[in-house]
Image 1 (cartoon, rainbow, N blue to C red):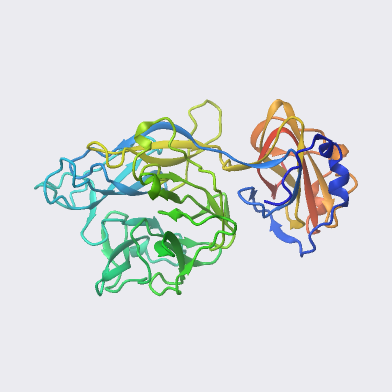
Image 2: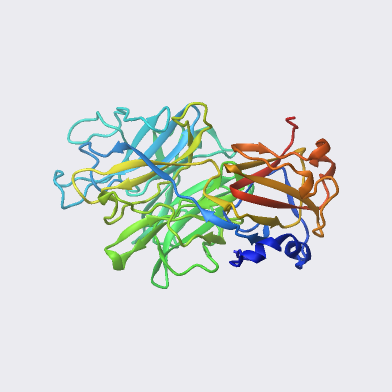
Length: 478
């Protein structure tokens, strides 16, 4: 990150002068528009000062929402894929059990399906599609080639034909080597392979290989596993029709160490789809093959800022310190909070108890909306200055949290870094509270709408506060 906060107290006192005179980057202003910007990277931040820092926040473990205890499931169920589809949440996962367990001989891997109305309470519909031990009373949705890592998504491409509204990727074999195949479905339940040939052949594909329609590029993206210089790593490719794909390219992580990355879980963030968030699994073969979930983000889908600190640690739960635990499964869901009058929160789903016992548990974790990373400052204070940008909109709103005694003030500067009259720091009463959309006000009811279309910068001054995201609303709310 740029301009790490100084450690000497006297520097904080000199901070306004430092930010005023330090040279600024000479670059064209960023075309922000009315998009929401998160601080999962330093893209929007010119510099930090005082005691301000980028702080990674950790999801909170909640209830065990799913246990893989059916005869066709077991302790090595994996590659859970979860997404909202209208009024319901859909879940797909591999049903499998370790050969050292107590399942019947010859148990095959199958793809299973579950659904929920709230993302917390899940049910297994009896689909009646495939027989297991002589009965079709089960939730098996696919068997055969691809069942190891069958990973569906709902295609949001407006030109997608109804018969292929749901698509999936899965590993198979082609000419004696691993390959990635495409599948389609009209309803997300009845599946068939798309063509006889694989869509990608350059890769190992022995992980959760997943794709989606990218609404900004107006193309399909796929992310999958391969090996690079002895490490498990991630490749990506693009397609306009889901059949013909570009040559795969490796992801890059400037400044990050070489590490085994087992899954990738990359998706456009639903509240800011120009930002890709990924939740790869770090695999530690020299520590008994324990694993844990990470956070990474990208602006182009190929170059990622990867946080070295774990997003999800194993913690005190002994079931999470085993081989292949703490996978953050594919899917960010916004679910209702159990606190009255509180906005929704993000739910992530993480496994525990892999390889141990007769089943595996899926635990829900929750985190604040936009809340993966914040610009944080303690009570002594800190601040951040953004890069120059051009916006559209009328009101500036923050996703922010302060203590009862803390607060945030915002100054709007011109592209050269000079305070704009009427929007200087002394014109902004300190705001405090906790809100996903905290409106910023200036004296004399000055409106940022008068500055739309011209290069500006924001200076955030914080005391015992966290700033998670900001945006300019198109409509006023005064």
